[in-house]
Image (spheres, rainbow, N blue to C red):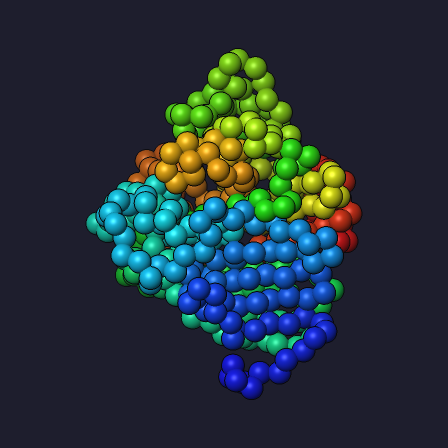
Amino acid sequence: MGTNYRQERSEGVRVSDAWTFRGLKTVILENKNIRLEILADKGADISSFVHKSSDTEFMFKTPWGIRNPKNNVPSTGDGASIWLDYYEGGWQSVVPHGGYPSKYYGADFGIHGDVNNIPWDTKIVQDSNKKCIVEFTTRSLRSPFEIKRIISLSDEDTFIEIYQEVSNFAEEDLNIVWLEHIAIGGSFLSDKCSLSIPECTVLSHPVDADKSSKLKPNYKGKWPYIEMKDGTKNDLRKIPGKQDRSLDMAYFTNLTDGWYAITNNDLQLTWGVEFPKDLFKYIWYWRNFGGGYGYPWYGRCYNAGLEPCTSWHNGGVEQAENNGSAYIVKAGETIKAKIKAGIFSKYSNGDNPFNYSP
C-alpha cells in the first residue's frame, strides 16, 4: 500500500513514512511506550528516541540540530567538517569507514565515510497493530558496499530490534570499520547516571582527544577504572556532569558479553544496547562532558557516545589495518548483525538489561 492510502491507527504499534522534517523524508515508528524519528533522507539516522510516559529523550541533540545537506554548499573541502556540519546527534550506522579522514583503497574518505548524509530507500515491510517493520537500504558513493537496516517494534515493547546487513559487491576482499555511532543525551543523561558494562579491558586514546582531555593517554587496565592525567584513578561507572568540562575517548574490549546499560538513578530509567560481541569487539566511549572547545562543540555539548565497533581506534580503516583490528569482508560476502536497543524501568546494575522485562 502506498503512502496516500496507508491505514492510520491510534492504538498498538504504528509506522508512517509520510512525514518530512526540514525537507528530509522522516519515518515515525511508535507504540504506547516509545516514539522514534528516523531520517530516511539522511543516513536513516535515529534522531529521536523518546520514552512517552516520562517524556524523556534519550538521544543527544547538537545545538544546531537537523540540517538538510541538500540546502547548503560546504564552505570547505575539509574531510572532518562536512560530516560534522550536518551531525544532528542521535544514532548513525557508519560503514565502511568509521573514524577520521583517510584514504580507503584510493578513495578519499572524510570522517565516518559517506552514507550518513545521503538518502536511504525506505520500505514498510510489515504494518500491523502488533508489529511494524521498516527497511532502509543505501549504497556507499565511494565504495562497493550496500547497507540494509531493518528496524522492528512490537506493540508492548520498549525496545527496538535492528537487523543489519553489509554486502560487498566488489570482486575483491575489502577491509572495513563498522561503527554503530550511538550518542546518548537529551533529558536522560545527567550526573545521576551510572554505566554498566560486562567485565572487559579498558583502553584510553593514545593521545589527548582534545585540549580539555583528562584521561591519561595510552592507558590499559581492567574495568571499571582508568587513570587520569593527574595520577588519580577514575571510576568509569559514574557519568560526570557537564561541569566536568572534558572531552575524551576511551575504548572497551575483550568483553565477556555483548551489551551495555546506562541508568539514570533519579528517573529510574535505563538505556540498554545488546550486540554481537564476536563482530563488534570494541565499544568506543566518546565522553563529551562540556569540553570540546572550538569547532564544532564550543563547549556547549553534553553526551555519552557508547558505540559498538568492529575495530579501534578512531583513525579509520588505514589505522585499523595497521593495528590488526580491521574487519575483512570477502568479495560477494554479506555480513549480518542483530542489535537490540531500548528503555527499561526494572534493572539491576551489572547484568544484561535484556534479561529483565521492561
